[in-house]
Image (tube, rainbow, N blue to C red; front, top):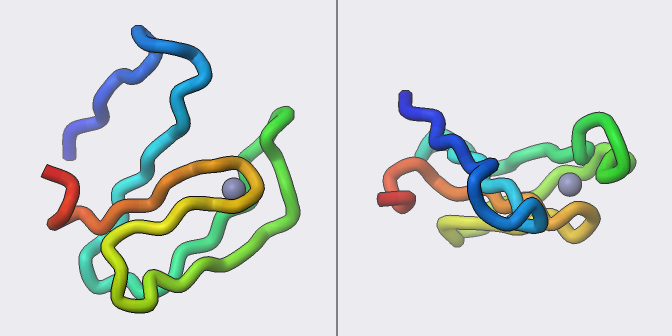
Length: 66
Ligand SMILES: [Zn+2]
């Protein structure tokens, strides 16, 4: 598992999270801090990535992130 350091670019870059290829749903609560929000669930619903409508985090299926 490689964790790319992403702090060398714009601080406004949205975070991207890799998820296992067999995961159908992801939850997001924005984490702590100013981006925090109520926990919500997103379904991939056949797609390879979803973005959180609250904080803009992106969740990408691992096998499609190359
Ligand atoms: Zn979020």
